[in-house]
Length: 255
Image 1 (cartoon, rainbow, N blue to C red):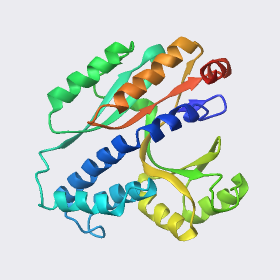
Image 2 (image 1 turned 45 degrees about the vertical axis):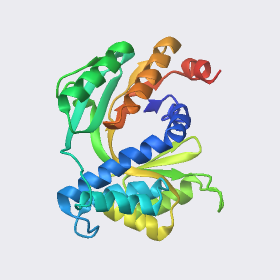
Image 3 (image 1 turned 60 degrees about the vertical axis):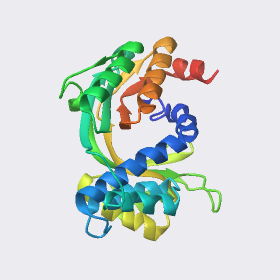
Image 4 (image 1 turned 180 degrees about the horizontal axis):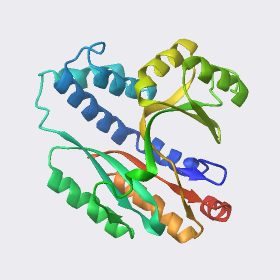
């Protein structure tokens, strides 16, 4: 998710995320239900469930929808037999892609995901194919221009980041990406809540440690279509990729 003004392609994804809010809620509901089924409905005793609920709250998922998803997982409904899988592959131009999957039919999901890769000129790889280009980290997206308060400067946010125990801060258009160790995720989120840091998203992510530069606008367009197609799959929870669009490509995509 890098760019020549690092993270500059994020704005091309934001509209897609907003447009898919209903589908996002459906995926989060499944995540919460499975977490509750595996570890119970007590947020304090089930870290996995607490993380899923925190992510849902940050995205303004309604409280009653969250509660229904928890109840379904603790026995008030059929949840199915879901398992977590991580898929890896290459998109157009050699862009590395990692997918977090939650599925009740691995064969169906693999076939559907492979079809999307094939459609847009990529290919589904084997385990370990691209994972070496990513690092698992906690990630928070902070609203740099919240509606109900003064805009956040990078300097002001940096002080909050240090106080919260996070490690890294990256500007991204009108927002900031903050990263921390996986083990510190819950503590950092709790501190951000205490400090009233305006969050747009909070999750565990596969963060690229190296990027793949894309200088052809047609290839870049196919990369975005591939990501869209993968995110449209109900079993795909998250998509992570390492594309780095050149300035000319960004200008062409903005037209």
